Image (cartoon, rainbow, N blue to C red):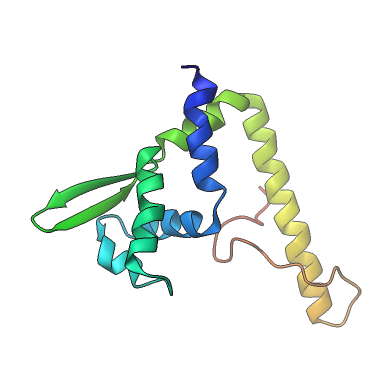
Amino acid sequence: MTVMDDMAPVFDALGNPTRRRILDLVKAKPGCTVGALAAHFDTSRIAVMHHLRQLEECSLVLSRKEGRTRRLYHNPVPIQLIHDRWTTEYSEFWASKMADVKFAVEQSASRRSKHGRQGKAGVKNPHPGSDRGRVA
């Protein structure tokens, strides 16, 4: 099996918005239980567990059994392996700087449109509260 074959399940898992949301929730609250996670969704617990199983199969989520409960933890290693495959130290630096510029421009345009000036309509910072948008 090649490295690319190992990455395919990770791409498949991340291709679904529900699984991405599960991953975000598990990352934000390490050690959460399956029940606590399922409470964030309008679907059945069985449906959430199906998505969770796919995340576990590609090692994006790790679980630890404690009695009758399972504690869930985010594992960033599979995503890091994908990042490392296609990113060099130089491109990572410039990609990060370009993302900072992009968010700064969008934030500026958003402020201008709020104050009645000409700006790009509908642009929102996809990472509110983060340090993105800060140009160093």
